[in-house]
Amino acid sequence: MNWSKRSRQRKLTRVKVYRYQDANQFYDRVKDYLLTDEALHNVQLRLCHSLIHNPESFEEKPLLATVEVEGDILAVAMRTPPRNLLLSKIQDFRAIEAIAQNLHLTENSLPGVTAPTNEAKAFAETWRSLTSQSYEMKMALRAFQLKQVEKISQATGQLRQATECDRELLIDWFEAFGVEALGIALTNTERAVERHLQRGTAYLWENETSVSMACHVGITPNGAAISLVYTPPEHRGKGYASSCVAALSQTLLSRGHKYCFLFTDLANPTSNHIYQAIGYQSVGDLYDCSFFRE
Image 1 (cartoon, rainbow, N blue to C red):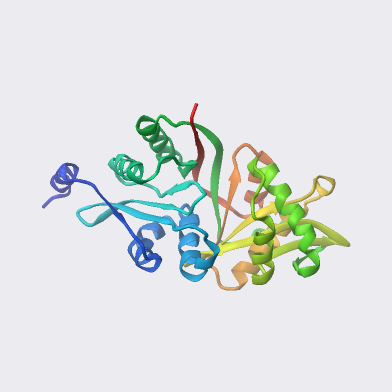
Image 2: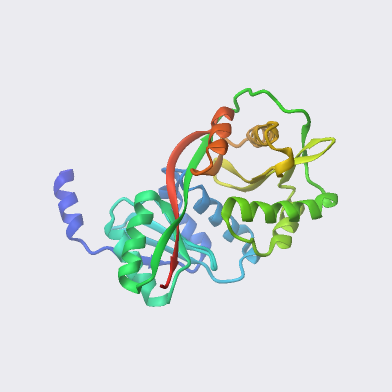
């Protein structure tokens, strides 16, 4: 059968949604699909790893679903309440209608959706037509991937792993990051700091005193992700964040990870510039959309 004929037949085939109760079975099913664009899907891959290895971190049952036709995955959907719905890159936009209809049977409302740009727009419109929930684009994001750290002018100081003595500082900086970078007051900040201290994944740039922060927030089969990059206002403009992220990226690559990943807010030209100078390359854009009732 030639490709065009198969394609026409697939368009006539009913799209099906499959939900999974077991994170291991779900990961086995979606791993290869997500790895076709590992950088863009690094949140989903990291989330799978956490659900399998640290299920106690999640207070509510996750939503794990695929949209398929004739055994081929068209889309992957995930949600760990109270967070947004996460959608993968989608091969066939019939999957948007299918997952929205399926969710509408079990969810009275959603807080939002995070997905590649076109997928986020399409789902938000479909969800609005089903539920009368309006939406707004909360943040335009860009996904970045790094294979090799470029040499930059290093700021004075050095990277060090955060310790128990830094607990209060980390709580303050986590909260400040949430307000400044995300526009929200983060919940369970103390619990998040506790996890990072236990796992040794919070790092500080030290120049006589702590001046910048970056955290290793999870792994994928081939990479490691960085987030929670924060420098307090009085220490900005001195290259601390660049040096902190560059040093942490190199640390993670030296441990055997092939890539490092991070996301930036497209409205922040400074962060987009400094990460590219370090060696991060753009791999795609996403929207973070919020839903609300008027």
